[in-house]
Figure 1 (cartoon, rainbow, N blue to C red):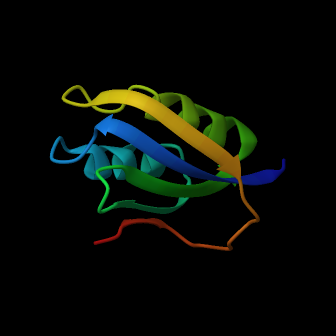
Figure 2: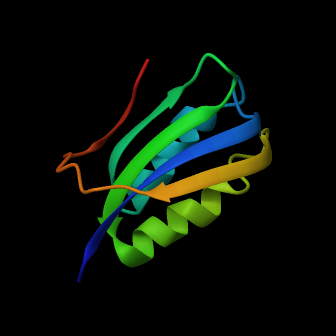
Length: 91
């Protein structure tokens, strides 16, 4: 099994709609490591790493987000492994 890391920027109605907490719950369920935070420009930034299938699952979930969100676009780039343990919501 190979680990992968992705860095994503999610745009749309993604702040104030439980997006960060829901992302953490999804990441925890998929056994991913990383973090999620709001950006000043209204986007949500997510760094996540783990097994390839789990990384792909979260990447697909980010396209829709939680029920209250309205995702307009997701920019995802590959990133080097960070060696992070656990998944947190950054302030």
